Length: 345
Image (cartoon, helix red, strand yellow):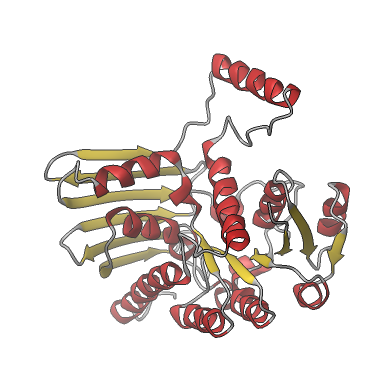
């Protein structure tokens, strides 16, 4: 198996998760870059030997085959384009960029330099979502008439380990590009597009500002898909716990998806522990995240990207997917501003 060298640009929450997954993979060397000394110290503690003070230095010196961009939104275009100019394949955490214009810039640079570009819409790798995708593709539900989607969480206010304040860029509308709609809504929009294989337009939008920030903490969308499907999306940053639900109503049946339960039975836990012990004794790979569906999907998406780099094939999720989601979000923000000129942007 061909060895791949991967650079991780940014060691915030998502960067640390991707690093953890990298350490579980074989034939993969890792270099990391971050301006935080404490983040780099934690990387050294888990065995990373190539440490760089920023992503420019990593791209200049590390000679990587590919990078994971896990930087703040305002650095996505700049860092991804620099990576492309250095001839390395690119995985960008969602959203691809703050606006559709920035997305196009990244795509153009990737195309010009003949590098691969993948966007981190990890929910496509969840088992339950792939089951529903198969049902829709096989026509089991008939024509999908309605979709109802809910995705609420604590947003940037989630608990951090080690404990640290929320980075200031999270609350700067210029740096982040948008609030709950861009942050959590992008996953839901991509999931709907992918599951029914169709494009949409925004018919209605509401943005709420409960916390009186520059950014919306609540968003409601009504979407019209080209083939006739109508969809509602409700998303927000105000909840004490994460809730994700999506329901499909078709002419031949319906299907619904809920947030994977965090409660694991003792019987299942013991069973998985025993299986992993046996795998270890037999010299086989331990199955990562065998008890957790969400983190396992993150592992799968990164594994897919590494396989694409190694085997020189196109990723399942491309820059076009990131662009189409960004176009809808841009459309929603523009509609809100045009119909509510006195409200906050």
